[in-house]
Image 1 (spheres, rainbow, N blue to C red):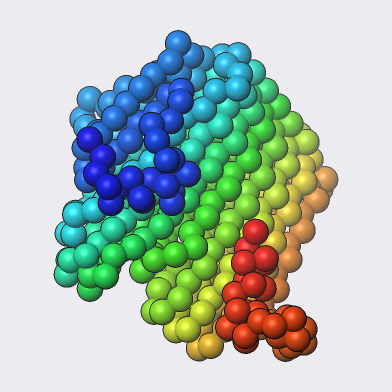
Image 2 (cartoon, helix red, strand yellow; image 1 turned 135 degrees about the horizontal axis):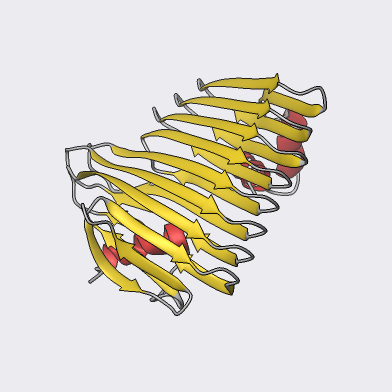
Length: 306
């Protein structure tokens, strides 16, 4: 069963206000709280108890899988491995995410590794949100790892968001793309206080006409620190683009480290990185409309991270 605090977290990380339709697996404080499968989507616990396998039948259309995780016990630490097998020609939405509510003095930590095996011509939209809350002194730590293997002609779109309450995170994503596969990653990240965040991406374009677009938008406030690392390896006739656009405020620190490697003469690779503060004229313009300086800053940040 999911209690009231856990339900609030589920609303934040998976937009769930009730039990979702379709296939789902809800994990709460290290245990499976609720699960449902469909004729086309099966969810099975790993024999060693370390996670779940999600198998989506070839040709499955217009179905979704929700696999959120909530932690509301201080001092709980876990590592979970979830494997997704998406059959050929499937077209599905996968909603993940983790929320930690820590009101105690001990650190709470969730390390989740998601491995995707995307079949030929399959399409996947993957939404991952991370959220932290609670007034305790214990840390809220999230370390997500994502590993993607894409077969010929497949498409995957990933939305990865962390906008509140996570004290420490190390976000690692790797992907290998076959011919004609296309990957789009959009990261949105906000840190404040003394929070630390590292985002690292490494994409290998291994087949003809494979393509990837990795875009990160982030805001660092107060004393927080961010590091963005993005590597694209062009191993065939392919196209790759990586972009980091960041707003820095107060005494924060941001490092952007793009890296491109072309191992084929027809690999077309581009990187862009920009870090800067909010322009004063933007704030002044909004203040003339009746907003306070703080409201103006928040309005600009919210628009930037959309």
